[in-house]
Image 1 (tube, rainbow, N blue to C red):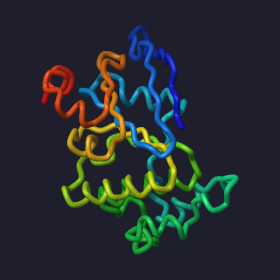
Image 2: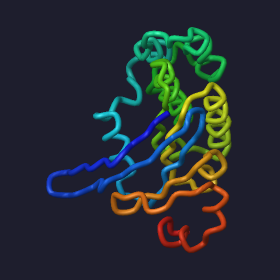
Image 3: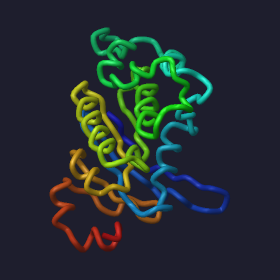
Length: 202
């Protein structure tokens, strides 16, 4: 589970996050939506304390995964191993000797997610995982999110693709000017034309 309470973040004199709070339940997906520049990525950076590298382009897929491995979880059955990871991402197994820089956009997103999972986290932070991906790969990314959720991980999903976010989220937050201004189920947001127009421009 992830719970964020009253985060305040400044960039110089700019007051970016103004008391942001949200919660992601165990084994659930919470989507964080909003226009560009409202503080969504800043929130993730504030949660983790820094911006980690998504991948190391000069390393192979195998090396990328190995370098991210952390100690196993208390329940060994819940720990992520390379074998378990390649069951979830079979295309990465096919590319195991390829350099990260040679992967397609979708494969690089999978590698970034795989690296994160090998750290055996309780919560996965995903910042616009569908950005720039072809529709077929977007559907594949959705399938992977559902599978990751089935393993009991919490997911905070920052996403500009509204339809994708509403399809895979269990709960939705909307951010504007550094604050959470709306929260509901995906179904309630879908029916609320005023909120979608005001805060998401749709």
